[in-house]
Figure 1 (cartoon, rainbow, N blue to C red):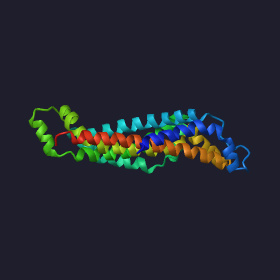
Figure 2 (tube, rainbow, N blue to C red; figure 1 turned 90 degrees about the horizontal axis):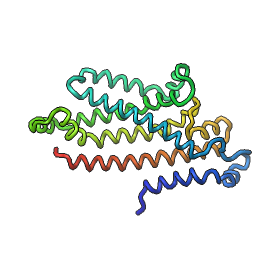
Figure 3 (cartoon, helix red, strand yellow; figure 1 turned 60 degrees about the vertical axis):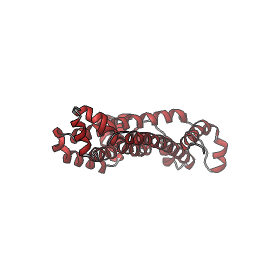
Figure 4 (tube, rainbow, N blue to C red; figure 1 turned 60 degrees about the horizontal axis):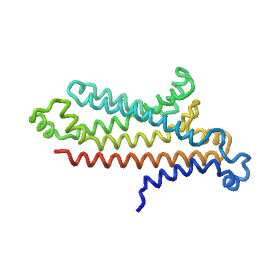
Amino acid sequence: MRDPLVLSAGLLAALVLGLPYSRPLFAALFPQIERPLYQADPFWLLLLQHLGLVAASSLAAALLGIGAAIFVTRPVGREFRSLLATLATLGQTFPPVAVLAIAVPAMGFGAEPALLALTLYGLLPILENSLTAFDQVPEAVREAGRGCGMSGFQLWRAVELPLAAPLILTGVRLSVTVNVGTAALASTVGAKSLGLPLIIGLNSANTAYVLQGALLVGALALTLDLALARLVQRAEAWRRATPG
């Protein structure tokens, strides 16, 4: 049986490399469209720029979400937990377009407002899963670690993190997959992404452009989702190998 991740990555590569030569196909599918193939930017460059937006925003969201979850599940930060959950939920109620509309006047056009919107939008799934993951670590396991003379950091690194990792990474997986689609909106504020063919296609009623952009975004989302699912499986194996 062939690996779904390899097949998905192969499909993405085939689309990126093959679409520049697909003008006859789209001309036949959409004979009424004068320019049936998006050619303003190379597809491979848009893919790299899209990946850059997703990677930077997802890394920022992961650092903030996991770091905040660690802080509020320690004795020193527990009193801030309800406030943090409220702020994260409030941030999630704002759609990315609204965040972009607020950020552009202050930050200008380009990647910066897009990164802000993507980070805020990707934060809640990571934070929620991280909080739940650390809460689900049995107290008896913590007590056993303390009984063995572990410090707080040693207990977190050797016991809590392995047990919490699968659920945390599931949140990261959800956040990244959502951000792949949301990053297409970055093109509305001047950032380069795979959303460019989609936005231009929608503005000019060019269905061929929309289809090309949608195929690339869909293939990228599927590939990253399968890759992160593989990472979750490895974290699950790590959790099973951890005592407790």
